[in-house]
Length: 93
Image (cartoon, rainbow, N blue to C red; front, top):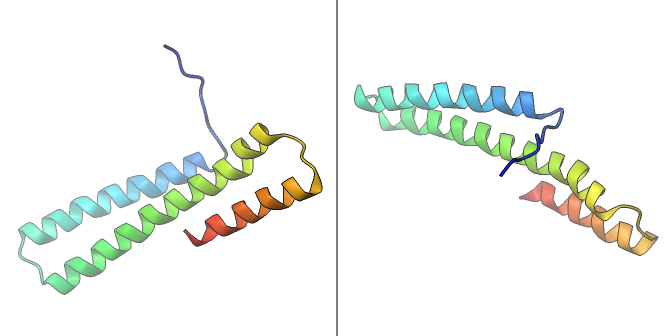
């Protein structure tokens, strides 16, 4: 089974962000192993969590802006409004 390459312009930025988060997460493991204070660890975990969430949000928005648009094609005004509202509300995820 072959899959076609699926890339958007935001993918390189998402990969960079995730690789930074990956390195950051490794350093957090080292902090725990070294017995660093829980507050310090929690702050760093929060930062990694935010980075991953932002990567996810960027990926989903990019998908909606490109893949969904390609799938639905031209729509009437009422249908277009429903799609636009859906895209808008996903920003609050």
